[in-house]
Length: 264
Image (cartoon, rainbow, N blue to C red; front, side):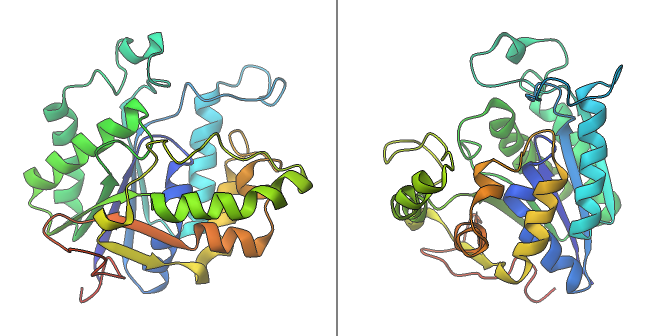
């Protein structure tokens, strides 16, 4: 049995980015540990969604544990930083925000968990955090440094396959418009993910697509039934989210791995 530690910025990121590899690891008998930098305090929530006196972070923590149960997570930890909000917002520089946290300090917190768990594999994000969110960029910086401090054998950077994403969006656009599904604001010049040429691992998680989607649904404060993630037909969801993409330094060129825990 090996141990996978997967590090994310906010509640719901884990289900969207790595829900498949987490459930896959669980079903193959490995230990799965989820670490989140923040509790997602800056997320948007529909008016009247929260109960009287309830804070958004409280709901998002509860949603995290619900999703973790679906994905087979053995341990959930929060590093205790505050959500920094989108890039350019005043909350980026608020005291206690993850964006302002010294990388070395945050990396030591994560490294302590990696050492305690004797982690074999760590996932974080690519150097642009997938799409430029400050907390996601910080997950990359902190995750990569923590992997060094803890001497974690395998460190993977989750990313999106930009080439596949452009193709998929183009193919799905007409169907989405007819069904009234609102697609994310994305075009060929957007810096989402990385070109396929830079990706070194592609994990087929179509067998776990149902778990991944149920985990997304557990984050109801952020992912509504009308969202892009949940409104698309099942077969389209499997095509869009049935592969999870990663970059591992020293691997490649090209995609050379299809299982983050192979041989462990």
